[in-house]
Figure: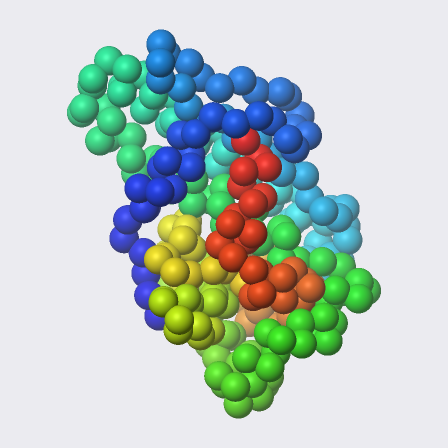
Length: 253
Ligand SMILES: [Fe+2]
């Protein structure tokens, strides 16, 4: 398992680039501008399904709070931190630029992780929830772990092994011509943006993701999440690139 220790410069570049608004948001937002310096603002991506669509595996109450309150808070705090950073850059206030980095890392990570998470879930009744929607990915899963049950056990073990809050991810690792699958965990809201890694799907292991429904039954949450994994999205991410996986983030600008 690996943990991430720094937010790559490329991500800061992504966060700082201005772009046109594409996705609908509750309130239109404009880039902050300070002379020649500006910073993008992010908005909450809409869920691709209703708040009750993942029941009975994840309750509507959890989904509404998780999306409209928790995810929105990460975005609100990220935008505020980016505004502070833009002002500090404009005034050459290096001390403030340094002090704001942890807030950007935490809240940008929250926005990245949740944006990916919503997209890699779907209603259990959807054809996309069937593992047959990911034939090429499953071929690689079986080549890596031997069979589906062994893979699920390994993923479950990683999730339940997280101490405190964090995330578990299946990722595709691409280094040169090498390509392999790996299970990784990240602490708090550290984003799954490791070098050469493409997130296939992730599971939120913060208590806010399950406690209202499962209480201390974390293992039951981990068991039931399999019913609502969007294997079609997983297959697309496996066959695609990092840009494909992270396109939802650009859409939230
Ligand atoms: Fe969360």
